[in-house]
Image (cartoon, rainbow, N blue to C red; front, side, top):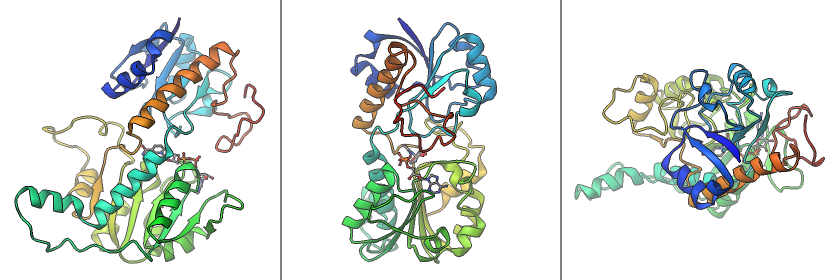
Length: 345
Ligand code: NAD
């Protein structure tokens, strides 16, 4: 029986893995704690650690896992910026879930955007108090506005299709533009200058960290709306707050936040929040924050369970071969297409 240490377990994780019948195939050790240097020891005796976006899988954790005899790190996410893939090279294999429901994330980005622009969150609170006033609820039409999309991969492209349905003009920036996609690619500066709304759908890398900072914001239109359902580190949150205070940024819709690791996914009501920056952002009337919720649909959870179990089985049953392995060996981990259908290292 393959033994799996399942870190950062939530009730919905257990339900989806149980529903998929995973318990009959593997032995799970469900742990509520996140993986980090202090909790890595809990994986002793396990063959696999199964982790999510806010688990810390740095060089020290990897070395300890290696020492414990863990053979596989199975991410339950698409993004893998929290895993030091280079340090894992030659020691432990890393697999992820490349696409569990790009629709879930793209649709959540739109949900945040419509809520913010049409002030739905404010109207909801008002009518519950029998306040039927419309003062302060004026929004704007999506139709005819320019949407700037950064990152035109699986999620970005679905998001673009939805935006076109609204009659928006879409421009995009991608480090690796998709050929023959019919997408109008522009430079990043051009995108900043021309967009009424900017939505981020690229991964967090050394290159993209803080791509939305003071300099970028200075190039944007006054009143621009920024949507981030990708990774918090793409935005310099202090610069964002300054942009909001200066009335340069019209609204921000955030599903992710750079310092979310110890805050998001937990019930912090009744506690004093130590993060002043996040508190200040949440206090702004034109900021909406959801706590890394974009992936959370029935379909996505089922796909995560199915693919994760499939990844683990594939690794152990096919002598370490798994199509969803994160490839460091080819030197281009973001674009490894696994055409070789063989081990990466
Ligand atoms: P993907 O790999 O299909 O697409 C990413 C795109 O970003 C690619 O087209 C790539 O060329 C582009 N890119 C890479 N480097 C870039 C750069 N420097 N500048 C601009 N573009 C660059 O990934 P995806 O499935 O569309 O997911 C996108 C991101 O969404 C993930 O990296 C992840 O961080 C995030 N995500 C968030 C949630 C959530 O719940 N909030 C869920 C899933 C994924």
